[in-house]
Amino acid sequence: MQDERAAPVTTERHEVVVIGSGQAGLALGYELALRQVPFVILDQSPRVGHSWRTRWDSLTLFTPHPYNDLPGLRFPAVRGKYPTKDEAADYLEQYAATFGLPVRLNCRVTALRRVSSGYLVETATTRFQANQVVVATGPFQLPVRPAWSDDLPAHVFQIHTSQYRNAEQLPPGDVLVVGAGNSGVQIAAELAPSRTLYLSVGKRLLHLPQRVIDQRLFWRLYTRAARRVAIDSRLGRWLSHQDVLFGTSLRGLAGEHGVSIVGRARGMAGDRVVVGRKRAIRVRNVVWATGYVSDYRWVEVPVFNRRGAPVHRRGVTAVPGLYFLGLFWQQSARSVMLGGIGDDATFIASQIAARVRGDTVMRRLR
Image (tube, rainbow, N blue to C red; front, side, top):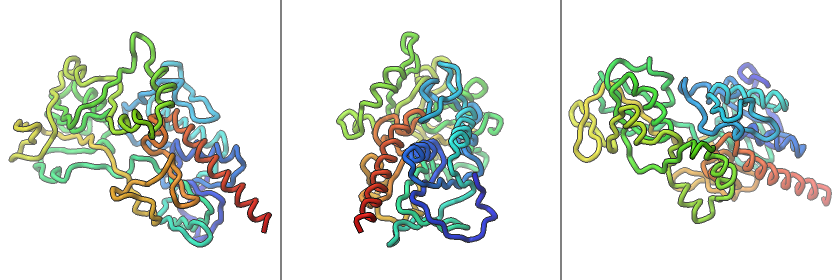
């Protein structure tokens, strides 16, 4: 793996440029190598697995072993164990090294343009020309918090889950966690034993326990049903708009951990946060578990809808040679899971290889 920080400004030519060395980019690299398609993977991070290493300390995957394998390499864990975020990061680093994937670190892409020769991918030090490009930067890019978060009094400590590491970051006092997805619930459960804690729930959640009658739910749901339920099916379209909470339920948080479940956080009333319709609470800390939005401002190709989301079918856009990988529900519920990205990577790699073969045939005919 090379480091781009000290390199002079140069121009390189590649068949395929993959942007992002997370689980999606690495799985695609493996599949491209199998098909003998030349490629390079670019990533702005200093280390493979960086996005996992910078999450909160106690984070674990909600998929147990053996459901976390990328194509070609088993995840090194005991069966039934829920890996830690550092174990996931180490696995990605091992994966890249095992297959000798050409990852360029500290290589931040600033622009992607379509040109007459294909695509131009720009970084601070290198211009990459490519026939095909895959955007595999994942769904977790820009942290989101409501605009009224700026109205919180100066004495209220607030932090987004992207910056949260452990309870020691928070000053003493009551905590309001805003957002009851998997991140918010896990952090609430971690903080509740030592704090008075409120969890703000904005909408109804679909809860799935991790164990059902002592059998792994993922054996049926994750490995079978989730693969079969495609995004273009009626059930898939419905599920893709649901927030699924794995493991600890809201009822469990309230009963076992003493968490107060409150309504949607709506704004400020003096120095209190308004939750639900009328209730206002005074807290010392606010943890924003309000998610992320994608940031594609650097992609200067017209493949986005009015909401800024890429328009695609199974990751293939209408612009020839441009693909996305690692999106929510790209093909199925497994699309953003560590052990599920392989299905999508295989499909995109096959599309790329078919295009390469077609171009080769055309050159021969000429």
